[in-house]
Image 1 (cartoon, rainbow, N blue to C red):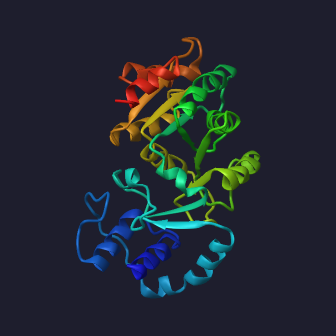
Image 2 (tube, rainbow, N blue to C red):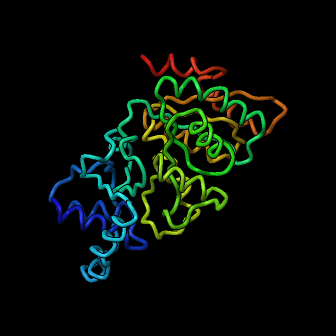
Length: 282
């Protein structure tokens, strides 16, 4: 199993190797089809032994240990059970901070607009204290706006928080959140499915949303326009069988169009923390 894990970690360091290519290689290695998240496969380019041998794995793992970065494969006991159930779960999680937070029975996702209004920030600070009192660990994406507010509110109210980032730990985005990220890596938890040296790509952002919802019992959307990436998180959450909540706003504010659309589609309207707790307790 150790050799299989090492091969998996090497594969995620090969640029351009996608989830399905890794699935095919893992199937060849294990000789069966029980790998999580499998649907149909398309032909993929072969990753040669030469390609993998060029990955200085032992050196990289040594560097990660020095930087207190945990490397958790889908075959490890530390890997969150709830994340294994989603479609295309991350093969590897790079984690820095308190990894025991992933075992919390009440992980709760908070997402929303990058252009958070005073109303959106007020909503966060109105809802989170009661959730934290009930043991919620707040999961968000470290983006500017609502994500940042969710992390900082959780911290200021004495709670715990997990940030799921696009790209690796060496390339925190946005840059204004570097100090917040460093604090979270020290006292809370930062996660990525990408190696530390990976620069964030545009497609990484919607992909990381499936991890935010996959980790969480439920997800709340606080302010979102019609084309907001937060709606992608809500879609993932529904697909994964998670509860979806939304905060209503002014009909005059276009930044609330997405949340109002979610409520029309059946997301639970939230005006107080108990609206969330009564759904997730039972």
